[in-house]
Each structure stands twice: as structure tokens, then as C-alpha cells.
Length: 198
Image (cartoon, rainbow, N blue to C red):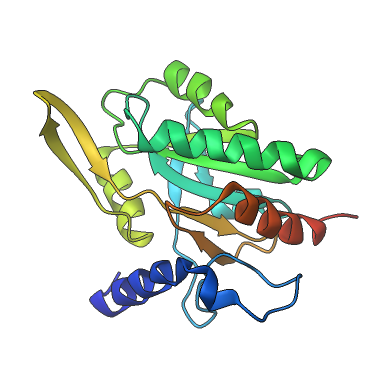
């Protein structure tokens, strides 16, 4: 991903202020929208059963892509709890949403750990893993920043925490920044999920 594309991503994440959306009608998205002229990032990894998976596999449903790791002390559990609260607000509409949790720590996060961890989100979820190289490529595609650091004497991973929301046609539509509210997530996911209803 080019530096100019990274600059666009940083810009749209900065649009989280409610003032940006003032004056729009109630059906408008509240979260920052991915620019239509920029292609949806690619994602080619494996699930916890060893099957190759790509975004195309989830067409027909809303997909939420999130990068994290099982031993994350704060950002990941808080984000999954936020998704669970949003799912509760959505009711049956949540059945049309898939969480794709991409581990940033494939060397330590086991299949069993990942499968158990993603249940925290209260959504149908698929945990994705791969080689460190494939994970790094996926993170670069989505402009996810991550680095191994030592914090309070313990090794951990510092990473960005956006949620990337893919519509039912497989196009990246929204990017929810770390400070997105449960209400705004539920609002926008409800709009997208309505488009998948038969």
C-alpha cells in the first residue's frame, strides 16, 4: 500500500468527530467511509481449521475485519466487548454479520485459543491466521500498524485498533476508529445488514 493511500486512511480515521456528520439525515452513516475510488484491500489467510480464506468467501454477509491477538491486555478485549454490545442492540440483524479476527501473533495464538477468544464478540466469527509474512502483508493492505514491544517488563504487541467493515458485495465501506461508540457501530451495521435481508 502506497504512502498516499496510508495518508487517506489516516485522514478518514480523523473524521470521527460527530461534527463531520451534523446535518445528515438519520439514515446516513455515522462512521468514516472508505473512499469509493480506493480498492478494497486483499485478505488471503487461513482459518483455524487450515482452510484458505479470502474476503470473497463472506460475500452476502457484512464482514468486520479486525487485527488483534489473544493476549492483548486492553484494546482487543475492549473492542470485542464493544462489538458484543452492538450485536445485542442489533438483535436478529446480527446474524447477517461475520467477524474476521486476524491474529497479529500467529506464532503464539493457537487455533483453540483463537476460536475461544472470538466468541467474546457475540457475533458469528472466523479467526484467521497464517505465517508471520502473510499476516504482515494483510496488515499492510489494511494499513494496520503493529510492532512488538516491551511494556512493564513483558513482551507484547502495540497495534492500531480500527474495525474495517465490508458490505455484502465485498466492498470496504466503513472504518470504525478505536473511539467509535457502540451506538454508532450498531447504527451503521443495521443499515448495511438491512441490505442483505431477503
